[in-house]
Amino acid sequence: MTTVLDPTPTRAPAARRAPLGRLTTLEVRKSLSTRSGVALTAVASVLPAGMTALTLALDDPPPNAPVLLALLGTLVGMLLLAVGILSTAGEWTHGTVQTTFLTEPRRGRVLLAKYAGAALLGAAIAVVVVATTLAVATVGTGPDFSWAGTGVAVAATVLGGAALTVVGAGIGAAVANSPAALTGTYITLLVGMTVLNGLKPVWGRRVDPLTALYDLIDGTAAGRPVAVLAGWLLVTTVAGALVTSRRQLT
Amino acid sequence: MITVSGLTKRYGDRTVVGDVSFAVEPGTVTGFLGPNGAGKTTTMRMITGLVTQSAGTATVDGRPYAALPNPAAVLGCLLDAGAVHPGRTGRTHLRILAATVGVPAARVDEVLDMVGLGPAGRRRIRGYSLGMRQRLGIAGALLADPPVLMFDEPANGLDPEGIRWMRGLLRGHAARGGTVLLSSHLLAEVEHTVDRLVVIGGGRVVADGPIGTLLAGDGVRVRALDPAGLADALTAAGFPVTADGPVLSVAGATAEQVGTVAARGGHVLTDLRPADRGLEDLFFQLTA
Image (cartoon, rainbow over all chains, first blue to last red):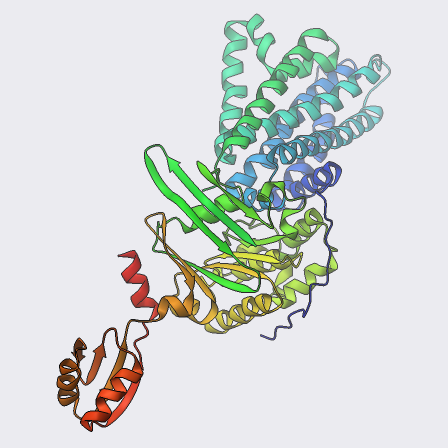
């Protein structure tokens, strides 16, 4: 191997810290720089088109756009949780968090960028989901299909998708292990919440984030679902921040 | 430069690094030696803030690592070659790093060529050997051409040519006025590369100084055609002599003193040199 060493330092990298906007962009780029990230994002973006067509072909299809978006938004919301989890827990699982903290040792800034990146990615995927869902619905529905409340439902889908992605990022940061975070999250949501909704539906509506997202999008309620999602956001992001700030990279 | 003062790390009642102090000066390569579990890696991780110290301070260029505005532009680190995402290509990994540090993307191809990974840069890291991952880690450390380099066991997985290349890289960096802290368990490699040594054992610094001074032994070693006769003459002159086959070790004596005794007795000398120790001897003596 031939090596040519620079005789003198030739580069003068920025003498100040990377701006938060650049860190956020890089976090999105990281999520999309691996096969698993691209595959998950692609599935979350493309799956709704097929699911919408399937849903509209049922004997009892959704009567209006908000209900249709609520069904698809909730389904994609589960995938967005995984996108968020992998954006933070994946760094710990693969050890890349060390490189991340060596280039930006202020862990609070890193986590803020990760949360912002997760929100952007989640919102972007939700926009694609909304666009494909409504496009398929435009073609596949008849005159009985109602479009009332579509604007609010679209906004709720995008904001709810962003929120669930950030919740996933918070869970990933708190657990710091991808398999454990994914398994724990899906057991909690698919088993725990199902049991709770069956036994105590009132309690379930107060804590289940997917039910909250559904109710928010289809317009059943506004205050309670927002409070439930805000609670999940608060608890998971704070837990993620606490663990990230204290964890030693031995 | 790197300055470590009273650095201590405790886990409960167990002290893994205790009151470690040393300085790594510009223009030098400093070797950081110690047996497994001595506290080298923990010390390096405390310097970079990856592990929080229980007491003491560590500064790079006069500031704690986390207080540097753009730390990777000041201190280039290779602490764990495995800290990379296997699903990314080497080039993508470095491009993300470059964007974080504020280095033009074109620099990525430069450092990939510099470490001998040019064509391999477009392959996914999961297909890299350990040596290739080490080279990728070194490329990442060199991205911003930082004045200070800190490498933890960089020779792991490198072939002999790679080790020679790395030696040239580190010596060249120091010759340009850069600062290098190098941890390695390859003692022969360290002996040929470093100017100074910091030896750590049981979490504490047990030696710190120029390698020439630390390896300098006490007394001289001498060979003669009649070793027994020379040994008698030296003993009669008041010098303690120990024989190791044909080689006589004379503690506390200079070459001039031994030469004078030999000349007076008419002894023919075939070798006379300071009793330098090898780094391996020093290492085991200090860390036993």
